[in-house]
Every structure is written in structure tokens, then in C-alpha cells.
Amino acid sequence: MVNKKLLIIYIMLLTSVINSFALEIEKVSNNVYATFGKTGFPSKENKGFISNSYGILTNEGWIVVDSLSTPKLATEFINKLKKIKNLPIKYLIITHYHLDHSFGMSAYKEAKIIAHKNLQEDIQNGNLENYKDMLNKNFNNLFKNVKFRNIDIPLNKKTTIKAGTTILEIIPLPNAHTHTDVIVYLPKTKEIFVGDIVFYNRIPFVGDSHSNSKNWLKVLDNLKTMEISKIYNGHNKPLDKNAIDFTYEYISFLRNKISKLKDEGLFYDEIKEKLSDTKWRNYPMFKEFHNKNIYKIFNDLDFEF
Figure 1 (cartoon, rainbow, N blue to C red):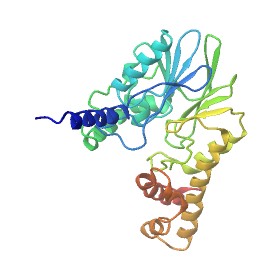
Figure 2 (figure 1 turned 180 degrees about the horizontal axis):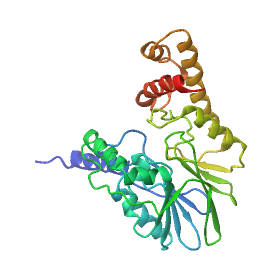
Figure 3 (figure 1 turned 90 degrees about the vertical axis):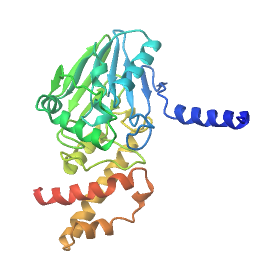
């Protein structure tokens, strides 16, 4: 005979696990709505829900920043936005190519997609498809239903768009976190969407094959000069301008330490060991990213002038 009490407890625990990865929307300012993903790598359990997506409500329709990592998640986000206000999705802006920011793009059938021109090139030359194939091998075909669309508005310079009374400035960046980074600025409210350029209390990923830590610090320096009321990134709740310092300090720490240790004649494995016990090891994603970050900066320093 089934123990009804144990069965109820089991169902409650199962429901708790499922709900822990539920896609919910929060209103984070007068016209900005967000869903916040979980920390970690994509898995069957979290359904790839590991990053944030934002909806900006205008009187002509929605503008979405970042598409989440699957069409299914993206569709769920779209449906929930339209329950808040049943308006069309006018634009999808992709802050960079990484799976958790771009792989849901095919769900945005009615929207014009805006992204860095390098993302358009990666779609056209098959690089993004190759990236997806590699991820499917590593993550048990989690992205098998992902399809890519052409970018409607590929950017190579600062561009202003308008939807009703809402004005957005979209700025493509030089190689920093990736070669496809853009930031989105609302000049009226001073809110800014930065993708993965700014982190707080979490280790950033500097190990992308196209990342450039030197440029990244320059981008952060420029952000410090801007009027910013609120920062929306890919993996934190909304931040204030002081959060820029966290990312800046970590990248500067790595660059300075690695440069000094290289000058002393140490190789990568020795430097990795030297930098394994730092204050940064207490932050999420240290184990996943820190050594990859060291490796990338170690190699890049040889080619900087």
C-alpha cells in the first residue's frame, strides 16, 4: 500500500524542484520587466534557464533584450510579456552570441533582430551552427531545436532606434567579453543593458576565444563616465553603477598578477597554482571560469603592445 503521507511529501519536493526553475517575470522599473535565470551551466534539470531576459514596454510594442537559450524558454517569456500588455514584439536586441543570450532567437518571428555585425557574419558562415553542435554534444542535445535567423539590423556603429516615445542607443563594442558585444542605453531614464560586460559577486568569463581583457577594461572605464541609474546584465538582479568596480577589479587583478608572474619566468600551470587561493575563489563560477580566464590572458599578453 502506498504511504499517502510520503507520497504527498515527494510531490511537494518534486514541485519545489520544478518551480525552482520556473520562468517568472518581475517589474524592475516603470517600463522594464525581467526574468532572472539560475546560476550554473545548462542542464536538463534547469532546461537551459541560466540567464536573464528583459522586456522594455513602449506605447508601440515590446523591445526585448536577449532571447534566453532555447525557443521554448523564449516563447514562454514572450507569452508572459503579452499577458502584461498584449502588444507586438517590435525588436529583439542580442547583446552577444553566447547560447544563453542568442539561442532563443527563432521564437521572435514578428520582431526585427538587432545585433553586432559580427553575429550576422557568424550566422552566415556557419560558426554559430558549429558552436551549437559542440554544445549539443556537451549538454545532451539540449539545444537540438535551436534555429538561427538572419540579423535584420546588424550594427557596426552606434545606432539610435525609436519605438513610440522610447529612445534607445545601441552601441556595438570592440572585442571585450566576445567579438559580438553590444550595450543598450535608455538616455531618458539612464538605464543600461550590458549583457555580460558587468558582473557583481560572480566571476566573469574572460576565456572566450575572441575576448580581449585590455579592451574590456577600456569599456568599463567608459561606462564609469556615463550617467547610469540602473544596470541590467545577463546574470544578476539589477545593479547600480558601483557594480562596475567588481568586474574591473577582477580583470585588473588577473592581468597584473599574470604579467608579473610571466616576467618572473613562470608558465601557465605555475601561475594557475599561484592564483588558485585568492579572495575571488569565494564567488560563484570561480571553479568553472577562473583557470580558463588565466589561460586566455596568459596567452593574450604575449601579443599586446
